[in-house]
Image 1 (cartoon, rainbow, N blue to C red):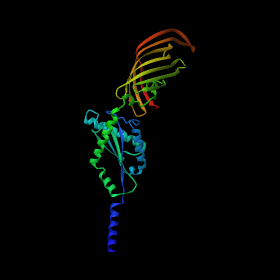
Image 2: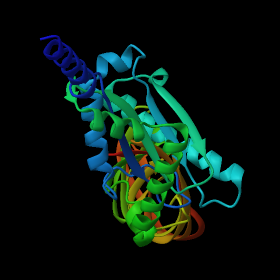
Image 3: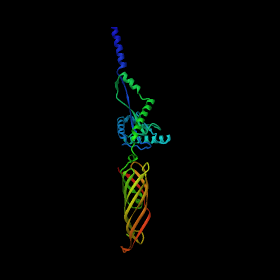
Image 4: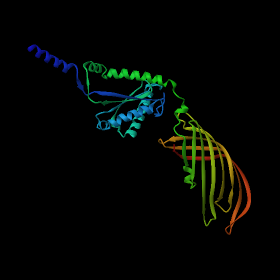
Length: 344
């Protein structure tokens, strides 16, 4: 009888130690966002970044309260090794990490303090975001527990995993698309030349970006003012279509060809001038991005204009023609500080 009791006690002890182990486990979730070598712009719909972003946002939403309480930080690591020096690599890695964090802050409504960020001048051209998500309690065997302990993340283990991820990213980036596909950040925008508006000449236009390097723009102006009992007049309309070629890495500088046509009626002195104008020339400019939706377009046009007009005087409220004239002009034909608003 004593042998049975001893055996039963030993058996129960072994069952307690060896088989069901109830433990709170945590699952590491790592999302990888790929970047083009030497560039810091975060292109969401590229190389699976949109899928990774959706997956990460789901994890954040499911654990948002814990994240906002500071109990579950998001570990962000920025990487770059495609620049010329270590300082440039670290600067680019920092910008990349900040762009990913900005996207998460906007979309997931979290804060900067919910991140722990490290930047690296090695490995590859990507950003990783990792969080340790608690999972439900499960019963595991002793063998499973030992296996999990064997792969429990350590500092060395994380480094090895990051190296493996970097190698995978290098293989994935082997077929990096051309710059034309990467900088196509808008297709249609609304334009307003602020210099025209300052002179009380309403001006609006559109630009259609056919591709990152080529765009078609058209601006139109119209105004009609009279004063001094209609003895003075300032009126005109103009249409100016333009073809542009954008240059450089950021596609900010451009050269273009413009055509201009319109009519005018000026009477700023005793003699008025009313007629047609037509001409064209080359344009050059620079677009300064203010944010994702707005930019300032600084431009200047040089070329030729022909003005064919009649001269007139106003006698007793009646316009009396007093000759006609033609003038040709070579030089500046257009200037603008244009506010550009991206529509889509």
